[in-house]
Image 1 (cartoon, rainbow, N blue to C red):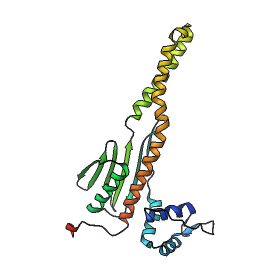
Image 2 (tube, rainbow, N blue to C red):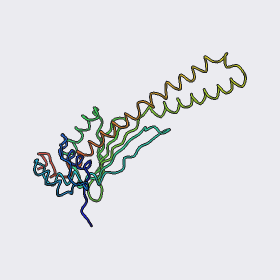
Image 3 (cartoon, rainbow, N blue to C red):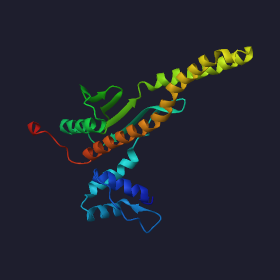
Image 4 (cartoon, one colour):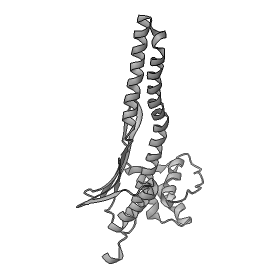
Length: 232
């Protein structure tokens, strides 16, 4: 079986993951076939990144789980992300990850431990660290709490407006009830339009934030365990 070769886009993403906090200007390969992991590690060595970290960052491309989305009338009302970790995170590493989550999501949130399960939540935003046969799984998910109501009620008001319009046209009383009809439609649009405009951007932001947290966890799991001084 031939060795896997990475495209130019994947090369950029791998080195972004490997450095975690900065993007690297990786020169495109002269070959349209991309670069092998060994070639990526050689480049990493030249700029001071260990082969293990590059390999872990490359592996992140393979282990990412599909990002589940909940939609309503085609609009994203919930997003999620999950990754598999090679080893369990130590308590110290989990605490560092919690600090990152608080900074990324700008929320203090609440911590909860149930045996081998660890959880951080802030309203509808939930991050769960759960054991697997080979390590741990990090799952992140959230739901836009008020979006469902706005979409359902807004759509219902527009539907009602359409029904009333048909009735008024059939009875020849549109002129008499026009103001009421406009009010119904305005309420429907007032609820539905903000959801249509804001939800896609909200979903993209949350997805990107979740991927950043997952990448930090993957980098932690790819290195030697970090333990608190009192556990030594």
